[in-house]
Amino acid sequence: MSKGINKRIDKVKTEHGELLNMIKEKISENSNNFQEHAKEILATLEYDEANIKKYEAMVKAQELVVSLTKQILDAKSVEEVIAIRKKLNYYINKIKGELKSREISDVIVFDYQEKANTLRKSIAEYICFFKREENICEIERLSSNYGNLSPEELLNLRKSLTRENRYNRRNINSLKERENNPETIIKVNNSVEEPRKKAKKDLAQNKAEENFCLAKIKNDGESDIVFVTGELPYEEMSKYFMRRVDSFDRMYDIAEIQNYQNNGLGRNVLTFFRNLPRYIHNKKAIRKMLKDYFYFYRGEDLSSYIQYMKKENSISEVLKGIFDSSYLFTNDETYLNEHQRCARWMYDFCQKKSATLCVRKLTA
Image 1 (cartoon, rainbow, N blue to C red):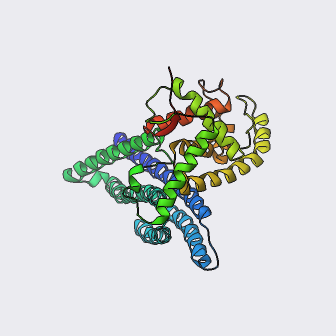
Image 2: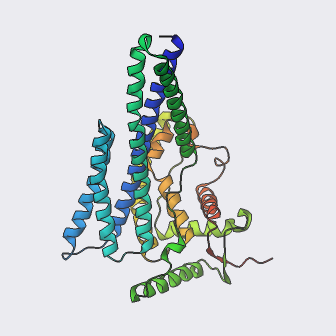
């Protein structure tokens, strides 16, 4: 067999293995996001003796989703993956059904479903990639008998190599592009709640949202409230977002994180252990924020603040950054203090979504 064919076969097999590893990593990432989101929802649910068994069943179902996802990654055949996926879908739907039965906000159910769909989509992609193993096996079968192949079989071998090479490169590039442009973790779609149920519970919730928003704004000393869509430049909105950061920091008793340095691994490791109790404290505060967000006030200012706090208090992300200083520091952020970084990040988050906000009317 020619060296050219050997190189092409090796390249296809290498890229196929790379593709499978990339989608496995994506499944793990989506599983972690789904697991974290589901835990946050479960943490907000109140339960008593009347429904404690159902609550425990939901917790167990969530644990099984995690376990089944790991089994999918360890599976040895497409048939095995499909069988495990069926079980996983059952438990995902079980949790969703219980959320709906409790008359929980449509926004919460929507967010849960979105995270579940992202995980399901990555598993479906994995099955598609896994099935390509049959093509790889056919290529190896033909190449093992290369000297005795008919002209038609030689043509099929070359076509198969070309097809698999194109498939691998296209999907590897697609996955890399998605890594560089990750989807927003928290996605608030105001249209999801329309039309709202006419029950007293929702009417009371609407009133609570309005009072909560206005009370916080008045406490900040703002007046002449108007609604804007986040289309103003940051220079005109910076004071507003800085006030929101100060307000939320006080409201949720956020612990200040010590800064990491862009040199000195040992120093950063020491700083991490000093910060660890603060991360734990802030994660508890995030759960309180989520409760407020789900049940009292769905403002985009709080949504963006939650998103920022989750990012800044992610222990796994910080550990990555400790071993890569460029991961923790960017040239345009090093000169900003924590409040400024948070305010700018919240503004960018809201700007991308054309968010509606309650703000003080700007004067000339």
